[in-house]
Structure formats: structure tokens, C-alpha cells
Length: 502
Image (cartoon, rainbow, N blue to C red; front, top):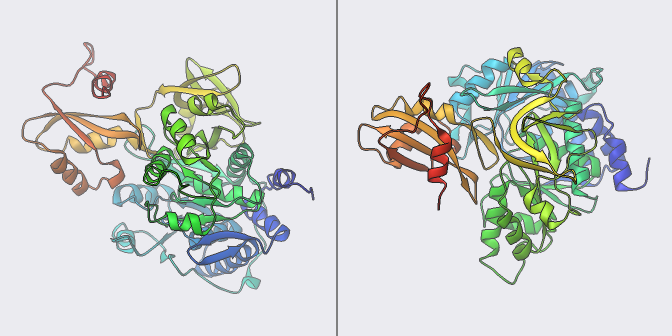
């Protein structure tokens, strides 16, 4: 086995499956910590062993290779163990973000045909178990602080595979009101995590952190990174500052982040204590998922005393480009970084298209798959941009009508459809506006026949079942929406121009 961290990571990156990667890391460094949470620590060997016991418990429940298991769980040690256990069995996993509610969860369960559904019980004031039964979910079981458990000696060998079988169904809103089921293999996710790890120049001496929902595709990206380089990550179940700072400091976190919103929150806390470092051990903030204003980059580097690298990814391709710590400040502030080896980027009529091992295999709906890929096998991203002479990617806009708030895709159409149910709304357009903390904020522009306030409108949307993270943060009431002269289509670019002004 190679001696250096980087060479070892490259060798491990050739693993065909997530379980194979877990086993290989456990053999290399069984006693090195992998997961840190509060006063708990689980080693890489312990992760393998606990996952095998959980896999045996799941086997006794009837989970088999190819069984679809949905899970909606917070960022906890148990969630990671369950994920690895399902990978050991060759099950198909369908992670669901914990703050999704009946509409999104019901759709994911129906479309994936999940045979089992793992939930946290009552979590943060919401009863997930009751929702699961309300939706008619099959095989519901709670997996917050206890997991299925049995003697692993009864387990059959891991199912044979090249790593190219579909084992993951992730969900993205895209441009329509219903989510899309994105199909990934173990190999596509290992490729994405490998690209991220190598771009960030991490080592076995680092201590990472997962403060975003592990059910996000970035969760698996990060787990792969830990397994490749053999360093631990602190798991933050609820990211709220300043409360979460204690965990970052106690575990000596060296790399943190998540998205633009995370950078802004860290910076706001740093400004409360100028002259002393917010997290003394922190050397790198890294993330993606939402636009990053150049001025935010410069403020973080100047005031927090660490590097900031930002990247470009999506549920279909978790790692496309990434800034590197050895990039120039100009590149880090104004671009999305460079693509890793093996990621092909083609710009066609301004649209960014992608081909490579980290690209998903398609969607649950074959028609969506056919539409998404061009004749050469490149994924149409719907994002507009260009490559610089140095190979860095600059994004300039989006073809898709989505809003990216705190790294999560929000469908404007879904919100518009619900707004049209309001008796005082004649017509509505929902747009994303630049926001230094969230990347974008949700703005509803409506034609109204009555009195409307933001509070009454968001209360109505809550009652209609819209998730909290999709609620508009700004309301503008107009006499008439701007439209073109042919099909009377609403001209959203005019609304963005009008309400983006200071």
C-alpha cells in the first residue's frame, strides 16, 4: 500500500462499492476516529463493525439486495451507520431531507416504491412517525438513537457488483413542481467524493465537519472523503450559531463550511469578537450549492484568517468544479474552480454540459433521462457559463427557473401553483433575488384583489403543506405583472431587475 495520504486515497478511490471502501479503510486504520458527535467517538473499525450488526438486523427485517429503503434522518452517527449497513446489503437507498414534509416525502415514497422507511420519531417538534403512517409508508421504523441489531455471522456475503448498479435515489426539485428522482451508483458517488477530497488538499491530520443534512448528496460526498483520507468529522445535528461553535472548538475542526449561508453566518459571529479567531484550529472553509459574492470571499479570508474554497455541484453531479487552496485569490473569489481529472465540461450555446464517472445515470422517469442527456452523453445542466483560459469555470446564470436558497433547489412553479389557490391572488410570479447570506431569497410578486401581507401569505402556504425552507421572504404586490406581447408570458427578468436594485 502506498505510504502517503494522497497515494493511499487514490488507491482507495478505485473501490467499486461504498462497503468495499469502508472495509479497506477499517483494515488500514481501525483505531483512528471517524465520527465525532458531542462526547461520542466512533472509529473506522467501529463503523464497520456496527454497520455489520445493523445490516444483520435489517436482514432479519427482510431487507435484501435491491430492496428500496427510504430514510429521513438528521445528521447523526446512527444515520451514517445505517447508510453503511444498507450499502453492505446492496439495498437501494432513498435519502430524504429531514425538513421535508408530506408533499415531498409522499412523492418520494410513491415514486421510489420504498419497502421500508426509517424516521427519527419526533424530532425538533415534528412527529415524523405519524407523518409516515399518515402517508401510508411501508416498513416504518425509527432510527434516531437505536438501530436494528443482530449477529452478523448470519449475513451472506456482500452481493457481487461492479459498482455500476443503481444503489441511490436522491431527490431534486429541478424546474418542475414535483421532485426528480436522481439515480446514482456507488461508483458515481465515490468518484464525486474523490474529486472533492483531492481538490481540497486534505490530509489525515485534518478534522472535518458535517453541519448540513447528511441526507443531502453532499453527505455521501463527505463520507467518501473521510474514508479516502482517514480523518474524522464532527457531526452537527443542528447548525445554529453561536451554539454550534462549542462542538467545532471541542473537536478541533480544521475544515468547515457547507454553502454561502454558512460562510455568512460564521463571518457574522467572527465580527462579534474581532481580534480573536472564532475557531482557532480552522484553516479552511469550503462548500458550494449557491452563488458566492466575491466580497464575501474577501471578507472571510481577511477577518476569519482562513482560506475559502467554493465549488459547483448538483444532485445529478455532486462535484463538478472546486476551488483549490493553491488557487489565486482572484480565481477563488470570482470562479467556481476547475473540474477534476475525468470531468468533461462542454459549453454549448452558453449552457454548461457534463460527462464523467461522477455524473448520475439518469432519473427514475426515463423521459426525463432522455431529455437531460444530449446525443454525445453529456448532461444538460441548464446553467450558463464559460471556461477561462486557465480552465476555471465561471457561471453567469441559469436556464432553469429554480431558486437556490442555502444550497437547496426550490421550484418557483411549485410555490406559484399554491399561490394561485389563494382567493386574493389573481396571478403570481416567484423569483430568486441575490442575498448575501442565503445565496438567493424567495420573492413572491403577486397581482391581488385584496389585502395581503407576507405573514398571512406564508401562513397560507404553510397550511397548504409547503416546506418552511421554501416560504417567500419578500412579498411585492403589483397592479399587473410584466408580460410579453405574444403568449402573455410573465417576464421574470424584468421583475428580477426591478427588485434586485438596492
